[in-house]
Image (cartoon, rainbow, N blue to C red; front, side, top):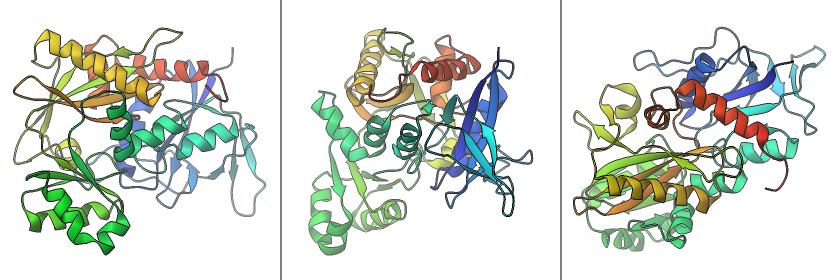
Length: 364
């Protein structure tokens, strides 16, 4: 029998470009080559698709972040599910053949936010992960919190800073934010991997933090600080009609001088650790697992997600956010949580591809 053809797509037009490459590198190492024919597809920072050459680097080297190698053949995706087409200037386009499934190891805008999912839906190509709506809502922290609060999940206090309001009514915006009390966390509304996030302790640092977040997104979310431990839980769709499964929860521990779980702590230094299972009462672990599944289903997620919570000293569980395509290196949080739950990384990769192949096309 012929192998299943999987196009692993990575890179992208956003600040999480390098994180995507690191995840794709782990997928390439883990995927079963006897079972799958793998096509490596990079998306350059300017949005061009290329067939990744053998010289492509995926790993972090010190603090040197990987980038998509643009020397490979340019690619196009026709809207008739006929497969990827490679083309070079002055040459006849070369059809690479039909792709059975796309594995988009993409994070942030123009990848995790429903855009590539919509493209693949239009092209009639199956893909790993959530669909258009769940991806879009999960990416936008404002609408994510609105949907999950409506579903009854406990959500912390926050203020949305919109572009027009910041430019024309800054005084009112700052007054609204200050009602949250200090400190506050300031985030781009549509970014991940802790990009553009900072902690503000006063008015001066608040304005600077909003401007910093606006470098990534004109819409900004400001959240009241919650005193508590960061506990995360991964959720995986089941094959068949069974309900989604939740992993054991794990606690993220930040070491060194980091005030919170920022980009450097995650990826550059050795300042992040994961305690699995989290050292919390068994009934609270079950509560977190149940809430994680509720969040997954409230957004209509597919494939996998990672759901993040705060566990306060009083024993309260408060929702933080959901990631529809969480960090996906072999040592990222979600894969570690599944490994601790009995599903190693290579089996997780296989499970996600099989879930995607089993998806009906069209409305679900």
